[in-house]
Amino acid sequence: MKAKNVNLLFASVAVLLFCFSCFCISRINQTSSELNNCRNHILGLKENMLRLKNESENYHQNLVQVMNQMKYEITQAASTSENVAEREASSLNENEILPNRFEDLRFFLPHLKTTGKIYPDVATGRGKAGVSFALGITTIDRRNHTYLKQTLTSILSRMTPEEEEDSVVIVSVADTDDYLNYVVDMVKTKFKRQVESGSLEVISIPTFFYPSVLLGKKTIEDSDSWQMKQTLDFCILMLYAQPKATYYLQLEDDIIARKMYFTKMKDFVNSLTSKNWLFIEFSVLGLIGKLFQSKDLFDFVHFFLMFYKVKPIDILLDDIFLVKMCGWGEHIRHCMYRKKEARVQYRPSLFQHVGIQSSFPERKQQLKDIFY
Image (cartoon, rainbow, N blue to C red; front, side, top):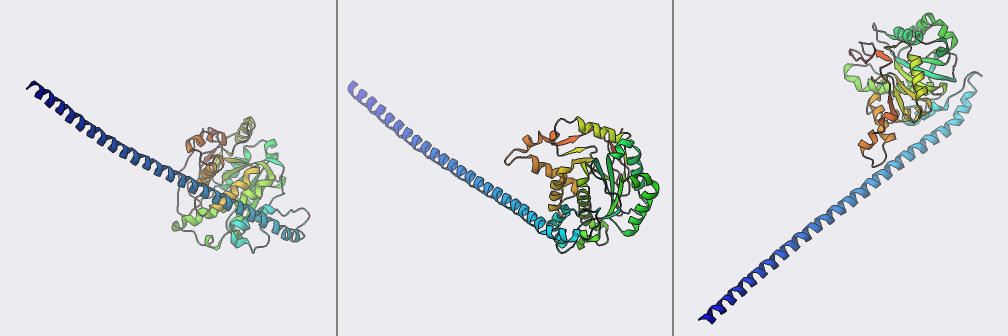
């Protein structure tokens, strides 16, 4: 009986061991299957990442090719225009120089390809150049709400004689001949000394600069066309001012300047130890008070002209920072660390916006800057 019990015990143990072995083998097979599935999933992710990387590299290469093609075509356009420039130069008097920098506009504005000489009209000016600062102001007729005289009084009266001698203020009229005549008469009467010394110039932008779609009557539903024309106005003024000075300051026709603004601006620029900045903000509103190095203006103008149909110019100013300062594949957070070096801010603002009636019809604006 005892032997029978022992045999039964051994049999039970054998059955348990067999069952446990089957369970272990089953779990091992299940785990192995799960590991294989996980491995296949990881391999799939790796293949997707490699595919995305290859696509990204292809996109980058395509973008580089497009940019190189654009540069090549711009170079070709400038090269082919030299012969035209030589022929037209004979029609200029000995005190005029035909500026080839406007020839690049033919690439960005196709309607100019058949236009002859591309250059704004100089209503009054003595060709002053070789100064430290050029101050540019675009203006259009706001009917009964003109601020231009107040703006020019503020800008010119708050310069010392030495600062006035080392600068040139350029007013660009982007409107009708009637408004141009008003501006010319006003500056010759109110600012006679500055006009005669060449420190104040007035230019006008001929209508052929603009695509025909931008020449129609401006209405409240036509804000996109108004913004496109405004961007072109800024670009043409920048190109005109570029060879005149080391620095270019963008202003608008409805601002006032802080006392000693020019001295503070000049001292701040000279205090910067690095010249690796894109622009300095002497006001945070729009393009008011943005100071550029003249040597960089071509890059800015070309960028603005590439996208003038897409965004307003002040938004494009933000975009060009990302394009020029952020490396390929670099995280935006790392790029923004360099923002203070490339986009320098001066506080408090040196310029205050005072215009309530916008240059766009029927629109009012109450924008103010920190100004004390």
